[in-house]
Length: 553
Image (cartoon, rainbow, N blue to C red; front, side, top):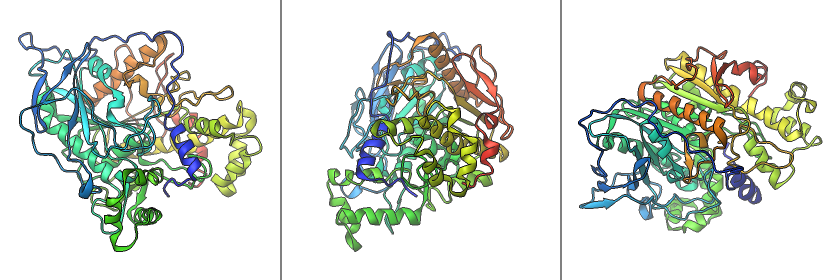
């Protein structure tokens, strides 16, 4: 079922839980990470700096140079999906004549929320299918750098590629990074009977942008045969779905997903947010079409004229139903012929290397956001939420997760849902991918003092390593480095090493850090990324996964 909530809940909780607050960057100015290329191959002594003007399918682009990177911003990869093109599959634009100034990011796609790390913002632009290319200043003509294509998260309903400043990642890892916008909410995931592309417009945007990156890689000094799609949250859920798509073969060589659950995320009633139905990140096309028809009706669009009526509607009117279209990426479609969760379990996936991580305290981002709106979680309400979520097994869960073990009921509930709906499903999905042919590297981000980029901290609530807390370790968010102190900076450098070496060779390695072992099954081993010590752990034991196999999902 899709995420459907009352208006106040949608407006309050969804923005609170997807990072509408400015990150809590406490303390002094964060130290600048080392800028030396940590894993770069030596460039030819005779080669010169890579140019700031390059010829691409989107025109002759003139970018800008910074101390860390070359940047080509606001590159149009698809025609504007507006007017009669609303809810059509994306198409590449004609190549413009002359030089295109690529020095300013394009507008974010229409949305009512914001990306993690950004101040609260909205966008009403539907002409938004732009991408950004970042390459290291150390790149030299003739190199063939790995290309990493970032699919951002935030529930399929907010975010933009330009919110993720990739200069640090590109410079330290000596890679090319492409960040992109894709249609969100009702604009990206509407389904209607007979509408081609229903439920998958956002995914189709992501795929077309990735094709653009592959086709134009050489122009920037990249290797078109070494493309890694990487993403977080909804971006990772989409990247996992890509592994099950017939279009993936020949398009992508590796996938790295953070907090994407290896396609297995599954929240019980009230699990993701208070009082919302059980859901997964994917929905059958038939159910998606029912949702589309229902929501169109609330805007007065019915019958044979539904689509034309919706295309005539204002962006502002469509934003009224926007939050409903969260976690409704459709399957039973040409792009996703079957439920990605089933395809992973049964082994019908592209057998390419996968790096798949989760965060130690995923659910705290959502619980902390809810608690700031209203004190939902208390000793009195805890049994009620357990009963809603787990029915006849609620007493078993209560005995396994007694309130006496935790500092407060909100942390207790966070732990239940983190284990049941995030960590254990992720491990199971990782193991399934490994069983069916992929080389899989499983990881867990675990900095208990990570920057609170979702702004959910309160006097009684510690977010720990919450959902999206790993993002500042790979990116500067809206150009800001939120890391604090030497330990976090060192962990960031290690993570950039691991991610970019995975993109380069398919094996994640980091200078001076443990080897990342291949996943051999649900018993692990999993690499835990902690600023004090990077080490292997038994994720199943850490998150009570043996217990959760006894509780029906």
